[in-house]
Length: 113
Image (cartoon, rainbow, N blue to C red; front, side, top):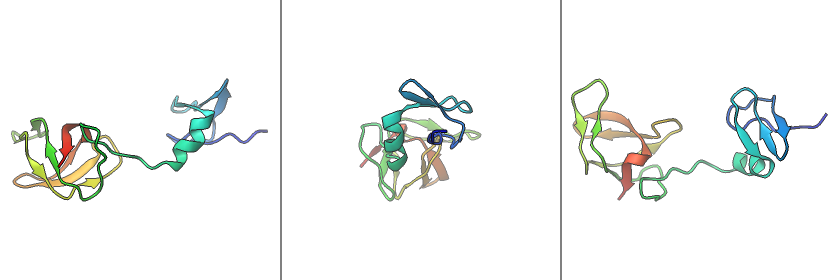
């Protein structure tokens, strides 16, 4: 029995080969045999709307009016946010915005200063 790698997305052990690709039957993720080994070793890289790499502690600016769910408040264009923290997930920036409080933002709506 051959030792196939676990799925890089959901860590399932039930992967199988399909030609030159690996397939996970649990989450339907597909990856190539060469990229499978490389992607597991690489750390996630977060980029802003302009393609600049973001890091913990950076200062960013909001590039689009963002409505706050469950509130009538809006984060306005040009709002400066200091000392961000990058996290995994849909909203990948944790921060505190003056006058609003703790928020999570998507990196596609910010630019690095």
